[in-house]
Length: 204
Image (cartoon, rainbow, N blue to C red; front, side, top):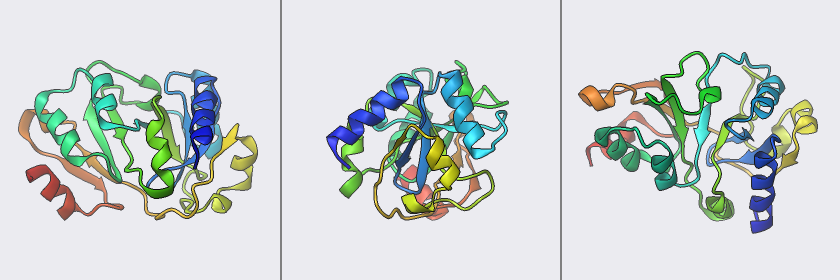
């Protein structure tokens, strides 16, 4: 991964394209979060119904918190404790931001901030958020290597970034949508980060 790769990534997304890129878990597809055409194409590549939510990925925590200005203080603190990392946080979204990522639930938003180290470290320079979803046909296995991504998807994207071999386990999903009110959360999916590790971070 190079600075030129990151610049190309930003240009692709900002112009309404769909990029295939490496995250800290598995390969993903990315589009500009407010681009109807880009998001439509991303969902079509996956064969995924448009009413199913995706997540918005930022590449630094403070940028995410600045964009999601209506998060309450308890939730903001939880975000800082949990991210960056291989987690998808489902947050209350009273401002209904990034509606194309929310599917049929505009009052809830998925947030990702990957932990970028080693070969992926240059991606931390990406300043634009992206709507992202795993780079696989809906219901098919996640891709750990670029070569494992479905050939049809690879033909249709506007840009491919090779980050080498990735861990291959998708993010753990933590539902914090009620956290501001009562400090409670749910774990709809256990993935790369254990529930015990989440508990430790939240109570640190």
